Image (cartoon, rainbow, N blue to C red):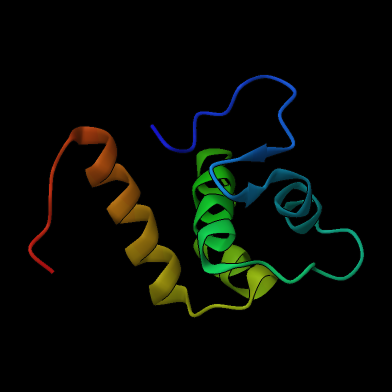
Length: 84
């Protein structure tokens, strides 16, 4: 899937992986992330068990946005397409 990244990569499909890792490290200020980087961060953090509200607060989006993006990523992985 789009979030499966080659080992050692620092960029993948327009996503600055270093910025995402810094954002998810919870150390220091969160770098400004593009929407695609935020989506990637949601998937990575959720896959490691970080609660949705903590992800939302860290990357600066609403809890419901984290939930929506996570569900969309699961659907994409399962090969499901949504109508909306």
